[in-house]
Figure 1 (cartoon, rainbow, N blue to C red):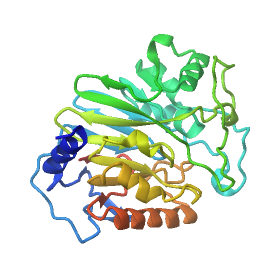
Figure 2: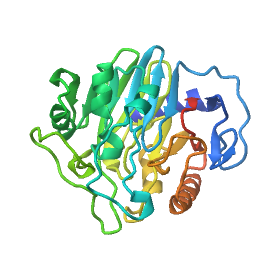
Figure 3: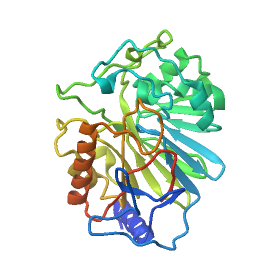
Length: 327
């Protein structure tokens, strides 16, 4: 049996009857409509499967807190949610990078690993402060490494990765996947560029370029395998054989990436659970229900419909902030 077939067999055998448990509330299948996660064919029934040791909390944008026993992994933690005017049609590229330490301190009591998909402000700007507060090791591109040095994060807490690495942390492993950033209607990337040496300490959001993009696959020992995206594009060949149980899928902001959802579902071997992310207005307070711009709400509905059309056996879970999901 090939590696891909074996991984698919084990995944399907383990999750055929799997439910999604949300502590403190039920999983959402539509904005503002709390419900048990449902497949396209109809409502799901509660199961008696014991939830795994890992809990997953969405922090808005593409950010996640994952607690595995007493160990904590953060993905793209962006809690400051500064107002750049992006959602008001008055985008200020000179907006200062002012970390809201009160909010960050409220939610980040610990972390040992921080995974950075790319270095735009809404993914990276809080990371240096979190690294200093917790002592966490930060994984990201070479740009993330050099930006970390610019913020005076000790080099011993920074690990540059490229894609292809499979890192063993004992209770979990992290596979790094080289990826792509989404593009705007002009087929361009906002704030493109990389940092090949430590720059001056960034002062504005324009000082944090994309810096190349990564995806991550977190595999919990005895638990689920979860795919994390921070931007809505990907390299299909790089996803071959991953076959995650759960896919955190970034909302596509444009249609310039051809067949985004069908190609992604096929490349991921049709995950059992699909969780849309990066659909909220990330310049508003982290309060449920998430604030969603009208255009993004339409795109979210379209993404859900596309998942159900191309991967009808996948359950779609629209997350709420701070809710502990167990897959």
